[in-house]
Length: 446
Image (cartoon, rainbow, N blue to C red; front, side, top):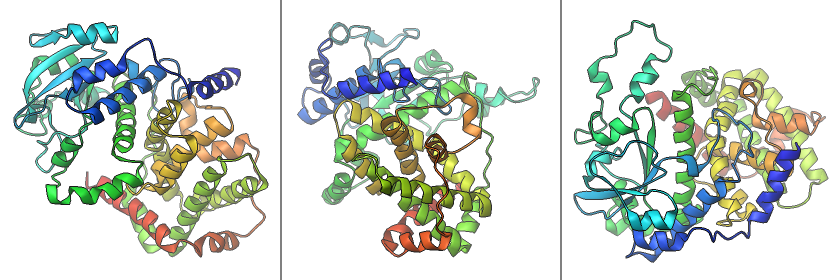
């Protein structure tokens, strides 16, 4: 508890901290000499990486399905010098073998304080995995090592299982780097995150014609602006890269929750009662998150007691759907929490602003956001992050909050509570449920 409190105090002090040891502004200008906007983005990214050296977003707890989250310990490359056919990669934190074509960039190495490498004139499609034919570069993607699939397949398989070359040689598009390419061979069982701050690359990657690009600005604004949206997405996805790498290396215990997504879709579509309960759950969690902007109050206590009752009812009446809620509050919500915390700690956004952005996020279903807000409530309100490896199986994020605060169940009836929250923002609540169904359908299809 003392350690977590100390880390939180350091976090508060870090809000105004400047990073003088390394000239991130100069590094950014060398990488993107023709774009001030891209330079500003990359400088902020490096500030997050620097902050992670001393401030793990999990407050040094083990966290769900991850050993430690620090961007400074993740291998990543920025995509630079993009042309119609080719792009260069600039590698940071590369501690694997150096192969032909991977050249030391002495200027960036001197500025960064450790070795930075460049791999030039790659066919863009050879590192692309997004878009309709999976041959489009986007602002975030990742490449896995040559033997990653083999390790994953053999992890829980019979010792005599033979993995076919066809399976091992799978590529997202025909021009993608082969398994025996120097880069993928050097990665072996590791992953490489590939990043770009470019708005142009975003539009190209998602196939948005020039005449429609201005229509995206309002959507960017709802997410705090293009840079904040892309930065948040990068940190979120880099959490998943680290999470996946930990799993490949057998560093965690699998949850084995195994929710039946088809059954959940059927339940949500057929039960107005369940939809109302979920909408009420969302409304209460978002309301509790909003109370973090001020000192604890009776309103917050009342909301927590109402939340406990709603959780108990969903768990009892619709256990399969509850599995989805708290499982995804961990798996996606914690990646979102790590991203939110990271951006707050270096002053890209304030805690209050980030709470509002999470609540209003038009892209993610509520489990992403309620999980992120649960993490923020634990770290900012309760100043703890009490996860251990086996706790993933016991209770949800918000149940941990309720337990730590010794919250008693509301003496109101379920009908009173659902009516109270069900009569307002009907359209917003329908949208929240629709996002869940869309997400579940897409993951079932996958």
